[in-house]
Amino acid sequence: MCAILLSGVLLGSSHCCIADGPSQLNAAVRAFTKEASTPAYRYAQVDLNGDGRADALVLLKGDYCGSGGCTLLVFRGSPGDFALVSSSTISNEPIGFVDERRHGWKTLLVTSRGVGPVLLRFNGTKYPLNPSMQTKATKEQAASATILKFEDSGLSGG
Image 1 (spheres, rainbow, N blue to C red):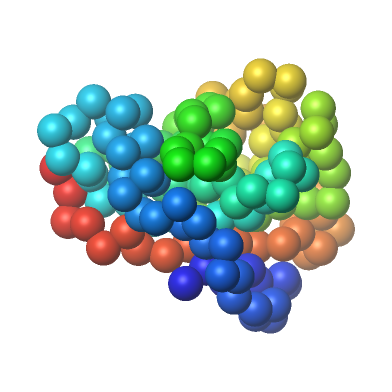
Image 2 (image 1 turned 180 degrees about the vertical axis):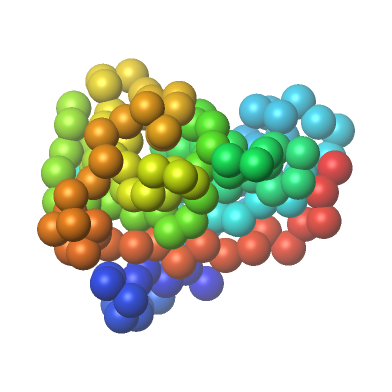
């Protein structure tokens, strides 16, 4: 199940979540990590680029986390698979998006430990690597952001 929260209110579930099945997202995560088995992760899906397909945000767990947060992966959804768009370090929930697009992609709102909510803006190729170096979200942006509900992958890790 995939659900979207808006300012703490559940908007509803979407049947498009993991539209091509969890095995495709697991394969995409495995391709990034280059591990024999898929590591544990949390994920949310939303159409980030306006193409009508569910894209995936993946927050890796375990060895992919440090004192500042975990690695966040963004995948573009396509028929039969997910393609890596970018990876960002030291990311924490809550994660969502604001009412802004750059190069056709939604601007993400990511929590950076010690900084608070920051904006990850797509540069035409990818989202920034280090959230802690990005523009801090205004109180208005943070309050009006759509916060995504991340689900556990159900995997125990590599």
